[in-house]
Length: 120
Image (cartoon, rainbow, N blue to C red; front, side):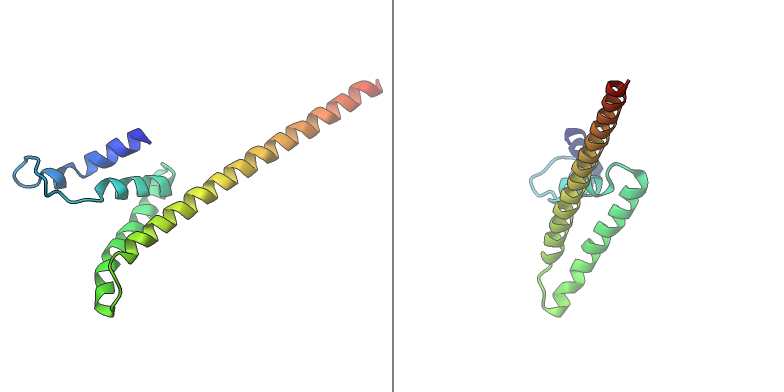
């Protein structure tokens, strides 16, 4: 997580320093959030990161047109957060199910091996 945050921070470094190449207090916010969001959604897989980047870019660009229809632009940020939470939770549930299934399979194999040894 620390490495992902550092890389996300480096991705926003040109925007942070701007044209003057100096650090100031009026830098844009949310650059690290976007980088970590894309890394979490893409599961550090290049193809997954490409699709996650397209999704986040679509949400960012469509948020500007929401204002025309009377909706707040922050809805896109809330949607990004909800997507990240739901995807991360579902990945964790699938991982836990896989581990539990693997443990059950090993237990069944050990029980079958023990039953064969006792019959001899």
